[in-house]
Amino acid sequence: MNQHDLMVSVLTAAGGEPIESHAAPGYTGKIADILFPADNVIVEVKSLTTDRAASDETSEAVGEMFSRHTHMGAPVIFGTVTVKLHDLPYAIAMNTLRIAGKRVLAEAKAANTQLKATKAALGRPEAMGLLALITPPFRLDRHSIVALVGDAMRDNRCRSIDQLFLVDPPLAAPEPYRRWGNSFMSLHSRPDADRILPQHLAEAIGRAWGKITGQPAGRGNEEDYHRFGATS
Image 1 (spheres, helix red, strand yellow):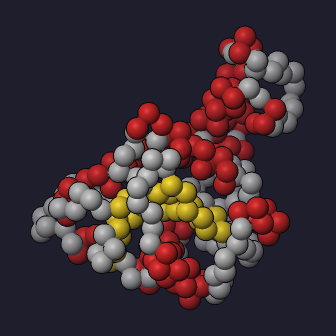
Image 2 (cartoon, rainbow, N blue to C red; image 1 turned 90 degrees about the vertical axis):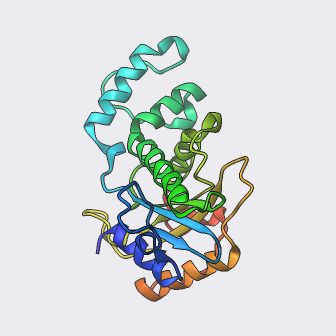
């Protein structure tokens, strides 16, 4: 079972239903993955499968961006060095994130398109759109992914995504990330969101995760995540 299928199985076990069973016969347009009919929540599952931030290609692209933006405070790099985002000017840090998180930005835009099309196809324009993004503990950490999805939403874009449901597990991950350890789930709303995932539904997803993976769900504070092994 890959990551995408794992997340779909969990959502189904939590009471979600395949969107295909609700679409009109013969519908061939873009479509999301799961519908929670009673709560009017549509979920699109996206999965990150490659550690782009750790690739040589990304390092080279970041280095080239630095060389073009020294006038904005980008560092001058000689040889191989480790650069922390927090040490960079904001604009340079965001450009670095966009290069390393190109796949995240693309997935957010694609999810928005699928959620928008699904709301129209099902006649549910007021449905809540949830992007469930599942990723192994790659170098691109949780906080960076949240920032990138927020960046995809800037200037009132990606309006069909109301919340990000970020899942950071080593389960079903590609090698060398396939190791047993803690998994982490967190919800992140867009700044102007007027809808959030109902608490009972979030708890149902947690219970379903425990049932399928053998990892019992428990509440955690964001500040404790790193202590228990989350990427941050």
